[in-house]
Image (tube, rainbow, N blue to C red; front, top):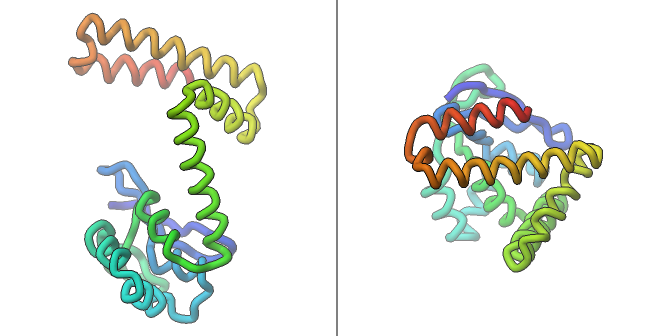
Length: 181
């Protein structure tokens, strides 16, 4: 693991590390607890959370690795860390006003996913809505959705001809992604 970074959440430092092998970020659980609770001693707060919620305690012990992260004194120390998915599970157990926006966001995303599984057209509408929220104009959004459709048709043809089982499939899809971006 490398790429130690400091992220800020409402002016609170949250240590993070990019794992190039797994291609995902890991965040210091104690730092997130500190940011969401304003606890004087976030380590104790986390310990008490684990005792109160046995399921959370088991979850942390089983799923969250100890990762080397830089301390404020400049030393590398093993730190309980979580990837975004694990972090969202942990945030669900924090009774904090700051955690509430995360919880509401999770509930909204879950609801949208369930709705879109019942009606696939909603997935397209949701994508358009999210692209607009990110500031993209209608022309860009239409081009993007058309490129997704075209890529799907092309990869379906490659699958029919057996290309998907080869290394060339990865190369071809990578080239398509680079061309689009």
